[in-house]
Length: 500
Image 1 (cartoon, rainbow, N blue to C red):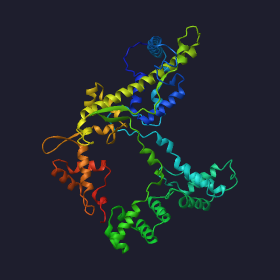
Image 2 (image 1 turned 90 degrees about the vertical axis):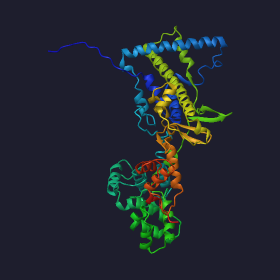
Image 3 (image 1 turned 90 degrees about the horizontal axis):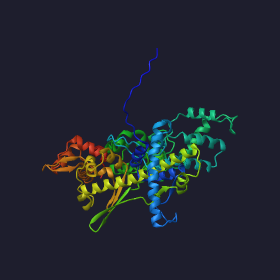
Image 4 (image 1 turned 60 degrees about the vertical axis):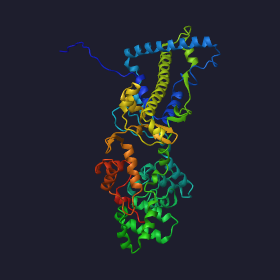
Protein backbone atom coordinates (compact mmCIF):
# COMPACT_ATOMS: atom_id res chain seq x y z
CA UNK A 1 0.00 0.00 0.00
CA UNK A 2 1.29 3.44 -0.93
CA UNK A 3 1.22 6.14 1.71
CA UNK A 4 1.42 9.86 0.97
CA UNK A 5 2.56 12.43 3.47
CA UNK A 6 3.46 16.11 3.48
CA UNK A 7 6.56 17.47 5.15
CA UNK A 8 8.35 20.81 5.37
CA UNK A 9 12.07 21.36 5.36
CA UNK A 10 14.36 24.38 5.04
CA UNK A 11 17.03 24.46 2.36
CA UNK A 12 19.65 27.08 1.66
CA UNK A 13 19.90 28.04 -1.97
CA UNK A 14 22.50 30.31 -3.55
CA UNK A 15 20.93 32.64 -6.10
CA UNK A 16 22.44 32.74 -9.60
CA UNK A 17 23.22 36.42 -9.05
CA UNK A 18 25.42 35.62 -6.02
CA UNK A 19 27.11 32.74 -7.84
CA UNK A 20 27.94 35.06 -10.72
CA UNK A 21 29.43 37.67 -8.37
CA UNK A 22 31.61 35.01 -6.71
CA UNK A 23 32.90 33.72 -10.03
CA UNK A 24 33.54 37.16 -11.51
CA UNK A 25 35.42 38.15 -8.35
CA UNK A 26 37.65 35.07 -8.59
CA UNK A 27 38.96 35.55 -12.13
CA UNK A 28 41.97 37.68 -13.15
CA UNK A 29 41.74 40.66 -15.49
CA UNK A 30 42.72 38.93 -18.71
CA UNK A 31 40.04 36.28 -18.19
CA UNK A 32 37.48 38.97 -17.36
CA UNK A 33 38.12 40.76 -20.65
CA UNK A 34 37.39 37.54 -22.52
CA UNK A 35 34.25 36.89 -20.46
CA UNK A 36 32.95 40.40 -21.21
CA UNK A 37 33.52 39.97 -24.93
CA UNK A 38 31.74 36.63 -24.88
CA UNK A 39 28.80 37.96 -22.87
CA UNK A 40 28.43 40.88 -25.29
CA UNK A 41 28.10 38.34 -28.11
CA UNK A 42 25.66 36.06 -26.28
CA UNK A 43 23.35 38.53 -24.54
CA UNK A 44 21.51 41.01 -26.80
CA UNK A 45 20.57 43.05 -23.73
CA UNK A 46 24.20 44.08 -23.20
CA UNK A 47 26.01 46.73 -25.16
CA UNK A 48 29.17 48.78 -24.78
CA UNK A 49 28.86 52.24 -23.29
CA UNK A 50 28.23 53.97 -19.97
CA UNK A 51 24.93 53.05 -18.40
CA UNK A 52 24.16 56.67 -17.72
CA UNK A 53 25.18 58.26 -21.00
CA UNK A 54 22.59 60.91 -21.80
CA UNK A 55 23.82 62.13 -25.16
CA UNK A 56 22.67 59.05 -27.04
CA UNK A 57 19.15 59.35 -25.66
CA UNK A 58 19.02 63.07 -26.44
CA UNK A 59 17.47 63.90 -23.05
CA UNK A 60 17.81 66.95 -20.84
CA UNK A 61 19.45 66.54 -17.45
CA UNK A 62 16.13 66.43 -15.59
CA UNK A 63 14.51 64.12 -18.10
CA UNK A 64 17.52 61.84 -18.13
CA UNK A 65 17.58 61.69 -14.34
CA UNK A 66 13.90 60.85 -14.27
CA UNK A 67 14.38 58.17 -16.91
CA UNK A 68 17.29 56.62 -15.00
CA UNK A 69 15.31 56.49 -11.77
CA UNK A 70 12.40 54.94 -13.61
CA UNK A 71 14.68 52.36 -15.20
CA UNK A 72 16.25 51.47 -11.85
CA UNK A 73 12.84 50.98 -10.29
CA UNK A 74 11.77 48.86 -13.25
CA UNK A 75 14.91 46.72 -13.05
CA UNK A 76 14.37 46.12 -9.32
CA UNK A 77 10.76 45.16 -10.01
CA UNK A 78 11.89 42.75 -12.71
CA UNK A 79 14.35 41.17 -10.26
CA UNK A 80 11.56 40.46 -7.79
CA UNK A 81 9.18 39.16 -10.42
CA UNK A 82 11.82 37.03 -12.04
CA UNK A 83 12.93 35.45 -8.76
CA UNK A 84 9.28 34.70 -8.00
CA UNK A 85 8.90 32.96 -11.35
CA UNK A 86 12.10 30.99 -10.73
CA UNK A 87 10.76 29.62 -7.43
CA UNK A 88 7.70 28.33 -9.28
CA UNK A 89 9.62 26.68 -12.07
CA UNK A 90 13.04 25.30 -11.17
CA UNK A 91 13.64 24.15 -14.75
CA UNK A 92 14.14 27.79 -15.77
CA UNK A 93 17.15 28.27 -13.48
CA UNK A 94 20.43 29.18 -15.10
CA UNK A 95 23.35 27.00 -14.10
CA UNK A 96 26.14 29.54 -13.72
CA UNK A 97 28.50 26.84 -12.47
CA UNK A 98 28.18 25.14 -15.84
CA UNK A 99 28.67 28.47 -17.61
CA UNK A 100 31.95 29.17 -15.85
CA UNK A 101 33.08 25.56 -16.31
CA UNK A 102 33.19 26.31 -20.02
CA UNK A 103 35.57 29.25 -19.60
CA UNK A 104 39.34 29.01 -19.95
CA UNK A 105 40.26 29.51 -16.32
CA UNK A 106 40.22 27.71 -12.98
CA UNK A 107 36.96 28.60 -11.23
CA UNK A 108 37.72 27.11 -7.83
CA UNK A 109 36.00 29.59 -5.48
CA UNK A 110 35.12 27.46 -2.49
CA UNK A 111 37.02 29.70 -0.08
CA UNK A 112 38.57 26.62 1.48
CA UNK A 113 41.96 28.28 1.76
CA UNK A 114 43.63 25.87 -0.65
CA UNK A 115 46.02 27.39 -3.11
CA UNK A 116 44.53 27.51 -6.58
CA UNK A 117 46.58 28.38 -9.62
CA UNK A 118 44.77 30.42 -12.22
CA UNK A 119 46.32 29.83 -15.59
CA UNK A 120 46.20 32.83 -17.94
CA UNK A 121 43.48 32.56 -20.57
CA UNK A 122 45.99 33.14 -23.37
CA UNK A 123 47.54 29.75 -22.60
CA UNK A 124 44.61 28.13 -24.39
CA UNK A 125 45.36 30.16 -27.49
CA UNK A 126 48.90 28.79 -27.55
CA UNK A 127 48.07 25.19 -26.66
CA UNK A 128 48.30 23.87 -30.23
CA UNK A 129 50.60 26.50 -31.76
CA UNK A 130 53.72 24.30 -31.53
CA UNK A 131 51.98 21.51 -33.43
CA UNK A 132 50.74 24.06 -35.95
CA UNK A 133 54.31 25.25 -36.46
CA UNK A 134 55.54 21.68 -36.92
CA UNK A 135 52.78 20.93 -39.41
CA UNK A 136 53.64 24.05 -41.38
CA UNK A 137 57.31 23.02 -41.54
CA UNK A 138 56.22 19.54 -42.60
CA UNK A 139 54.06 20.80 -45.50
CA UNK A 140 56.88 23.08 -46.70
CA UNK A 141 59.47 20.30 -46.54
CA UNK A 142 59.07 18.83 -50.01
CA UNK A 143 58.33 15.36 -48.63
CA UNK A 144 55.86 13.15 -50.47
CA UNK A 145 52.17 13.39 -49.60
CA UNK A 146 52.32 9.98 -47.97
CA UNK A 147 55.20 10.93 -45.67
CA UNK A 148 53.44 14.20 -44.81
CA UNK A 149 50.37 12.15 -43.86
CA UNK A 150 52.58 10.03 -41.57
CA UNK A 151 54.25 13.16 -40.20
CA UNK A 152 50.92 14.71 -39.23
CA UNK A 153 50.04 11.61 -37.22
CA UNK A 154 53.43 11.70 -35.48
CA UNK A 155 53.04 15.39 -34.61
CA UNK A 156 49.57 14.92 -33.16
CA UNK A 157 50.89 11.99 -31.10
CA UNK A 158 53.40 14.22 -29.25
CA UNK A 159 52.71 14.88 -25.59
CA UNK A 160 52.71 18.34 -24.01
CA UNK A 161 56.49 18.26 -23.49
CA UNK A 162 57.13 17.38 -27.12
CA UNK A 163 58.09 13.72 -26.59
CA UNK A 164 56.85 10.80 -28.68
CA UNK A 165 55.78 8.17 -26.18
CA UNK A 166 53.54 6.01 -28.37
CA UNK A 167 55.10 2.84 -29.79
CA UNK A 168 55.99 2.84 -33.49
CA UNK A 169 53.72 -0.14 -34.12
CA UNK A 170 50.74 1.59 -32.48
CA UNK A 171 51.09 4.70 -34.64
CA UNK A 172 51.49 2.60 -37.80
CA UNK A 173 48.38 0.63 -36.84
CA UNK A 174 46.46 3.88 -36.35
CA UNK A 175 47.64 5.13 -39.74
CA UNK A 176 46.36 2.02 -41.47
CA UNK A 177 43.01 2.45 -39.69
CA UNK A 178 42.45 6.10 -40.61
CA UNK A 179 43.57 5.84 -44.24
CA UNK A 180 40.03 4.95 -45.39
CA UNK A 181 38.74 7.65 -47.71
CA UNK A 182 42.20 9.10 -48.34
CA UNK A 183 44.48 8.87 -51.37
CA UNK A 184 46.40 6.11 -49.55
CA UNK A 185 43.41 3.85 -48.96
CA UNK A 186 44.88 1.00 -51.01
CA UNK A 187 48.41 1.32 -49.61
CA UNK A 188 49.99 0.09 -46.39
CA UNK A 189 52.15 2.29 -44.20
CA UNK A 190 55.48 0.61 -43.52
CA UNK A 191 57.90 0.87 -40.63
CA UNK A 192 60.59 2.16 -43.01
CA UNK A 193 58.36 5.06 -44.08
CA UNK A 194 57.55 5.81 -40.46
CA UNK A 195 61.22 5.87 -39.43
CA UNK A 196 62.14 8.10 -42.39
CA UNK A 197 59.46 10.61 -41.45
CA UNK A 198 60.31 10.55 -37.75
CA UNK A 199 63.98 11.10 -38.55
CA UNK A 200 63.08 14.13 -40.67
CA UNK A 201 60.98 15.67 -37.87
CA UNK A 202 63.73 15.06 -35.31
CA UNK A 203 66.59 16.41 -37.43
CA UNK A 204 65.01 19.04 -39.68
CA UNK A 205 62.20 20.75 -37.78
CA UNK A 206 62.28 23.25 -34.95
CA UNK A 207 62.51 23.33 -32.01
CA UNK A 208 65.48 20.94 -31.80
CA UNK A 209 64.86 17.87 -29.64
CA UNK A 210 61.23 17.51 -30.69
CA UNK A 211 59.71 14.02 -31.09
CA UNK A 212 62.44 12.39 -28.96
CA UNK A 213 61.70 9.12 -27.20
CA UNK A 214 63.39 10.05 -23.90
CA UNK A 215 65.17 12.90 -22.16
CA UNK A 216 68.55 11.45 -23.14
CA UNK A 217 67.51 11.25 -26.81
CA UNK A 218 66.12 14.78 -26.62
CA UNK A 219 69.42 16.21 -25.37
CA UNK A 220 71.48 14.20 -27.85
CA UNK A 221 69.35 15.39 -30.78
CA UNK A 222 69.97 18.98 -29.74
CA UNK A 223 73.70 18.39 -29.34
CA UNK A 224 74.01 16.85 -32.81
CA UNK A 225 72.16 19.78 -34.39
CA UNK A 226 74.26 22.40 -32.58
CA UNK A 227 77.16 24.19 -34.26
CA UNK A 228 79.60 23.74 -31.39
CA UNK A 229 83.05 22.18 -31.46
CA UNK A 230 82.94 18.50 -32.50
CA UNK A 231 85.02 17.35 -29.54
CA UNK A 232 82.70 19.17 -27.14
CA UNK A 233 79.68 17.54 -28.81
CA UNK A 234 81.33 14.08 -28.71
CA UNK A 235 82.16 14.32 -25.00
CA UNK A 236 78.72 15.72 -24.19
CA UNK A 237 77.01 12.79 -25.91
CA UNK A 238 79.35 10.37 -24.15
CA UNK A 239 78.44 11.85 -20.75
CA UNK A 240 74.70 11.70 -21.46
CA UNK A 241 74.83 8.13 -22.75
CA UNK A 242 77.23 6.64 -20.23
CA UNK A 243 77.51 8.98 -17.22
CA UNK A 244 74.03 10.43 -16.92
CA UNK A 245 73.78 9.91 -13.13
CA UNK A 246 77.09 11.69 -12.59
CA UNK A 247 75.80 14.48 -14.79
CA UNK A 248 72.58 14.77 -12.80
CA UNK A 249 74.36 14.82 -9.43
CA UNK A 250 77.21 17.04 -10.65
CA UNK A 251 79.96 14.53 -9.84
CA UNK A 252 82.59 16.46 -11.76
CA UNK A 253 85.56 14.44 -10.55
CA UNK A 254 84.02 11.11 -11.64
CA UNK A 255 83.46 12.42 -15.17
CA UNK A 256 86.93 13.97 -15.34
CA UNK A 257 88.50 10.63 -14.41
CA UNK A 258 86.28 8.51 -16.70
CA UNK A 259 86.81 10.66 -19.80
CA UNK A 260 90.39 11.56 -18.91
CA UNK A 261 89.74 15.29 -19.29
CA UNK A 262 90.52 18.18 -16.94
CA UNK A 263 87.91 19.83 -14.71
CA UNK A 264 87.88 23.00 -16.81
CA UNK A 265 86.76 20.99 -19.84
CA UNK A 266 84.13 19.25 -17.68
CA UNK A 267 82.84 22.68 -16.67
CA UNK A 268 82.51 23.70 -20.34
CA UNK A 269 80.56 20.51 -21.08
CA UNK A 270 78.20 21.11 -18.13
CA UNK A 271 77.58 24.70 -19.17
CA UNK A 272 76.80 23.55 -22.72
CA UNK A 273 74.40 20.82 -21.59
CA UNK A 274 72.65 23.16 -19.14
CA UNK A 275 71.66 25.42 -22.04
CA UNK A 276 69.74 22.59 -23.76
CA UNK A 277 65.96 22.42 -23.52
CA UNK A 278 64.73 19.30 -21.67
CA UNK A 279 61.10 20.01 -22.66
CA UNK A 280 60.99 21.30 -26.24
CA UNK A 281 57.20 21.03 -26.30
CA UNK A 282 57.01 23.87 -23.79
CA UNK A 283 58.94 26.13 -26.13
CA UNK A 284 55.89 28.25 -26.99
CA UNK A 285 53.65 27.77 -23.98
CA UNK A 286 56.16 29.17 -21.48
CA UNK A 287 55.86 32.72 -22.79
CA UNK A 288 52.08 32.47 -22.57
CA UNK A 289 52.04 31.27 -18.97
CA UNK A 290 54.44 34.01 -17.87
CA UNK A 291 52.23 36.71 -19.37
CA UNK A 292 50.78 38.85 -16.57
CA UNK A 293 48.44 41.83 -16.67
CA UNK A 294 48.03 43.49 -13.25
CA UNK A 295 44.47 44.03 -12.01
CA UNK A 296 45.48 47.04 -9.93
CA UNK A 297 47.98 49.89 -10.21
CA UNK A 298 49.50 51.82 -7.29
CA UNK A 299 51.13 55.20 -7.85
CA UNK A 300 52.75 57.49 -5.33
CA UNK A 301 51.15 60.91 -5.48
CA UNK A 302 52.25 63.76 -3.19
CA UNK A 303 53.49 61.44 -0.48
CA UNK A 304 50.45 59.16 -0.51
CA UNK A 305 49.45 56.12 -2.55
CA UNK A 306 46.83 56.29 -5.27
CA UNK A 307 45.13 52.97 -6.07
CA UNK A 308 43.51 52.45 -9.47
CA UNK A 309 41.92 49.59 -11.34
CA UNK A 310 43.62 48.54 -14.53
CA UNK A 311 40.52 48.34 -16.70
CA UNK A 312 41.74 50.22 -19.77
CA UNK A 313 40.88 47.35 -22.15
CA UNK A 314 37.57 46.45 -20.52
CA UNK A 315 34.59 48.18 -22.13
CA UNK A 316 31.89 49.86 -20.07
CA UNK A 317 28.59 48.00 -20.18
CA UNK A 318 24.95 49.02 -20.08
CA UNK A 319 21.52 47.60 -20.76
CA UNK A 320 20.46 47.97 -24.40
CA UNK A 321 18.00 50.91 -24.58
CA UNK A 322 15.99 49.45 -27.43
CA UNK A 323 15.17 46.30 -25.48
CA UNK A 324 14.40 48.35 -22.37
CA UNK A 325 11.96 50.40 -24.35
CA UNK A 326 10.41 47.32 -25.93
CA UNK A 327 9.75 45.73 -22.56
CA UNK A 328 8.38 48.93 -20.99
CA UNK A 329 6.04 49.69 -23.88
CA UNK A 330 2.66 48.39 -22.65
CA UNK A 331 1.09 48.85 -26.09
CA UNK A 332 3.19 45.97 -27.41
CA UNK A 333 1.42 42.65 -26.96
CA UNK A 334 4.40 40.36 -26.39
CA UNK A 335 3.84 36.63 -26.38
CA UNK A 336 4.96 34.63 -23.35
CA UNK A 337 8.09 33.25 -25.02
CA UNK A 338 9.28 36.69 -26.14
CA UNK A 339 8.57 38.25 -22.76
CA UNK A 340 10.40 35.41 -21.01
CA UNK A 341 13.38 35.86 -23.35
CA UNK A 342 13.53 39.59 -22.58
CA UNK A 343 13.12 39.17 -18.81
CA UNK A 344 15.71 36.39 -18.58
CA UNK A 345 18.37 38.21 -20.58
CA UNK A 346 17.50 41.51 -18.91
CA UNK A 347 18.23 40.09 -15.47
CA UNK A 348 21.32 38.22 -16.64
CA UNK A 349 22.68 41.45 -18.10
CA UNK A 350 21.96 43.41 -14.93
CA UNK A 351 23.52 40.73 -12.74
CA UNK A 352 26.58 40.68 -14.97
CA UNK A 353 27.04 44.46 -14.72
CA UNK A 354 26.46 44.36 -10.96
CA UNK A 355 29.00 41.54 -10.60
CA UNK A 356 31.68 43.51 -12.45
CA UNK A 357 31.00 46.64 -10.38
CA UNK A 358 31.07 44.56 -7.20
CA UNK A 359 34.41 43.07 -8.27
CA UNK A 360 35.88 46.53 -8.77
CA UNK A 361 34.68 47.80 -5.39
CA UNK A 362 35.93 44.70 -3.57
CA UNK A 363 39.40 44.78 -5.14
CA UNK A 364 39.81 48.49 -4.35
CA UNK A 365 38.75 47.96 -0.73
CA UNK A 366 41.10 45.01 -0.29
CA UNK A 367 44.05 46.80 -1.88
CA UNK A 368 43.45 49.94 0.19
CA UNK A 369 43.42 47.85 3.37
CA UNK A 370 46.61 46.03 2.32
CA UNK A 371 48.39 49.33 1.64
CA UNK A 372 47.31 50.64 5.02
CA UNK A 373 48.54 47.50 6.79
CA UNK A 374 51.77 47.22 4.75
CA UNK A 375 52.55 50.95 4.38
CA UNK A 376 56.16 50.45 5.52
CA UNK A 377 56.66 47.91 2.73
CA UNK A 378 55.40 50.27 0.01
CA UNK A 379 57.32 53.25 1.37
CA UNK A 380 60.63 51.35 1.52
CA UNK A 381 60.97 49.88 -1.99
CA UNK A 382 59.18 46.62 -1.23
CA UNK A 383 61.16 45.64 1.85
CA UNK A 384 59.99 44.98 5.40
CA UNK A 385 56.83 43.03 4.70
CA UNK A 386 54.89 42.48 7.93
CA UNK A 387 52.99 39.30 8.88
CA UNK A 388 49.40 39.61 7.68
CA UNK A 389 46.40 37.29 7.53
CA UNK A 390 43.43 37.40 5.20
CA UNK A 391 41.04 37.52 8.15
CA UNK A 392 42.61 40.82 9.27
CA UNK A 393 41.86 42.45 5.92
CA UNK A 394 38.38 40.92 6.01
CA UNK A 395 37.76 42.57 9.37
CA UNK A 396 39.05 45.91 8.10
CA UNK A 397 36.64 45.98 5.14
CA UNK A 398 33.77 44.14 6.89
CA UNK A 399 33.74 41.16 4.54
CA UNK A 400 34.01 37.43 4.94
CA UNK A 401 37.57 35.98 4.87
CA UNK A 402 36.50 33.61 2.08
CA UNK A 403 35.66 36.66 -0.08
CA UNK A 404 39.12 38.10 0.50
CA UNK A 405 40.72 34.72 -0.24
CA UNK A 406 38.72 34.42 -3.46
CA UNK A 407 39.57 37.97 -4.53
CA UNK A 408 43.36 37.86 -4.07
CA UNK A 409 44.06 34.54 -5.81
CA UNK A 410 45.55 34.98 -9.25
CA UNK A 411 45.47 38.81 -9.06
CA UNK A 412 48.47 41.11 -9.41
CA UNK A 413 49.22 44.73 -8.55
CA UNK A 414 51.73 47.02 -10.23
CA UNK A 415 53.65 49.19 -7.77
CA UNK A 416 56.35 51.82 -8.40
CA UNK A 417 58.98 49.14 -7.78
CA UNK A 418 57.48 46.09 -9.54
CA UNK A 419 54.57 43.70 -9.92
CA UNK A 420 53.38 41.58 -6.99
CA UNK A 421 50.75 38.91 -6.56
CA UNK A 422 48.11 40.06 -4.07
CA UNK A 423 48.41 36.78 -2.22
CA UNK A 424 52.10 37.52 -1.53
CA UNK A 425 51.13 40.26 0.93
CA UNK A 426 49.69 37.65 3.28
CA UNK A 427 52.40 35.87 5.24
CA UNK A 428 52.69 33.99 8.50
CA UNK A 429 54.77 35.27 11.39
CA UNK A 430 58.06 33.97 12.75
CA UNK A 431 59.85 35.26 15.83
CA UNK A 432 63.41 36.57 15.81
CA UNK A 433 65.86 36.44 18.70
CA UNK A 434 64.39 39.66 20.12
CA UNK A 435 60.88 38.24 20.20
CA UNK A 436 59.62 40.39 17.32
CA UNK A 437 57.38 38.99 14.60
CA UNK A 438 59.03 38.64 11.19
CA UNK A 439 57.25 37.78 7.94
CA UNK A 440 58.21 34.45 6.39
CA UNK A 441 58.61 36.34 3.10
CA UNK A 442 61.41 38.35 4.66
CA UNK A 443 63.00 35.10 5.85
CA UNK A 444 62.87 33.74 2.28
CA UNK A 445 64.56 36.91 0.99
CA UNK A 446 67.34 36.49 3.55
CA UNK A 447 67.66 32.80 2.67
CA UNK A 448 67.99 33.60 -1.04
CA UNK A 449 70.65 36.23 -0.29
CA UNK A 450 72.66 33.64 1.66
CA UNK A 451 72.48 31.16 -1.21
CA UNK A 452 73.32 33.78 -3.83
CA UNK A 453 76.46 34.77 -1.93
CA UNK A 454 77.66 31.25 -1.03
CA UNK A 455 80.84 29.65 -2.35
CA UNK A 456 79.50 27.72 -5.36
CA UNK A 457 82.33 25.21 -5.16
CA UNK A 458 81.14 24.33 -1.61
CA UNK A 459 77.43 25.24 -1.41
CA UNK A 460 75.78 25.59 1.98
CA UNK A 461 73.74 22.63 3.17
CA UNK A 462 70.29 23.18 4.68
CA UNK A 463 71.87 22.72 8.12
CA UNK A 464 74.48 25.39 7.29
CA UNK A 465 71.74 27.73 6.09
CA UNK A 466 69.74 27.12 9.25
CA UNK A 467 72.77 28.04 11.35
CA UNK A 468 73.45 31.16 9.25
CA UNK A 469 69.84 32.31 9.71
CA UNK A 470 70.11 31.67 13.46
CA UNK A 471 73.22 33.86 13.49
CA UNK A 472 71.08 36.63 11.97
CA UNK A 473 68.55 36.26 14.77
CA UNK A 474 66.09 34.11 12.81
CA UNK A 475 65.40 30.82 14.56
CA UNK A 476 64.64 28.51 11.63
CA UNK A 477 64.93 24.71 11.77
CA UNK A 478 66.70 22.78 9.01
CA UNK A 479 63.42 21.21 7.88
CA UNK A 480 61.83 24.65 7.53
CA UNK A 481 64.84 25.88 5.57
CA UNK A 482 64.40 22.98 3.14
CA UNK A 483 60.71 23.85 2.75
CA UNK A 484 61.44 27.53 2.05
CA UNK A 485 64.28 26.64 -0.34
CA UNK A 486 61.99 24.36 -2.34
CA UNK A 487 59.30 27.06 -2.49
CA UNK A 488 61.94 29.35 -4.05
CA UNK A 489 62.74 26.64 -6.64
CA UNK A 490 66.32 26.40 -5.39
CA UNK A 491 67.90 22.93 -5.64
CA UNK A 492 69.76 21.26 -2.72
CA UNK A 493 73.43 21.97 -2.13
CA UNK A 494 74.82 19.05 -4.15
CA UNK A 495 72.98 20.27 -7.24
CA UNK A 496 74.11 23.88 -6.76
CA UNK A 497 77.77 22.94 -6.88
CA UNK A 498 79.83 24.48 -9.67
CA UNK A 499 83.41 24.27 -10.90
CA UNK A 500 85.13 27.61 -10.33
